[in-house]
Length: 319
Image (cartoon, rainbow, N blue to C red; front, side):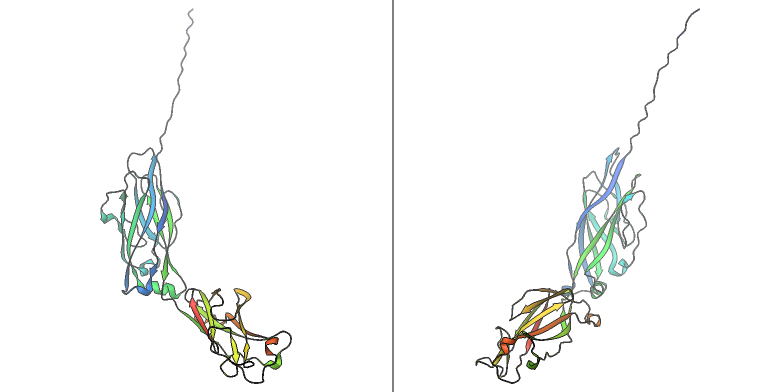
């Protein structure tokens, strides 16, 4: 009998090469838009954004991508990009957005889109990163409406998508600062009356409230008295302070809801405090600043009876 041995050995090797790609925004550069110097109803504007759209593993060629403006973020992820939308961008942007890019030779016909719609596909050569420079025409009236509503920037989203077999997408929030004609005003000021007979203790005080508005949301204040301009504030019986007993020194103290501690002003240029102001011209009908005039009891000693007064000029500047 013969012994027959059969030995079979074998194994299978399974190897899969998966292409890896991605789309990532790196950042953007956008200069402010100054509406106060814009002389035309349509403003031409450019900004640039840097991004990566590269195949890193198993690549057989360059990656194709596309770009868009959306009124909302589509986030970041893999797979087909979520829907984008125009929103109010169509009221702000006139006509199509055009852009130029580095790192490719794609025709300019693919490099344009309407807000809420994708551009044509851009065929990117192998590159670590690329830059897109966008040219758009903006409606001045619509931008001014944003400023008037209290928004100091044009805000929207730049979306990008890798459109090869493995899809990736990313979103970049764009904030373009808006600058308009800065304006301020102070309203609801009243005369401040102090009665020496009411002195009790160390000080004689009286206060008023007012409404202070700034298109920037912040102000600085300076004050000067009429009796002795540029010098410490003085109340006077004669509109002059050239004789003893004719004048009474005083200080002005200021506070706001956002700065509840008193800040003292004694003469012109005395303080450089930055105050928060309302961006509503009427302060939503609620006064937002308090002025107090204070005289020390010691300053009232030995003065002649009479009516002492001063006119205080308050200068408000945007900050």
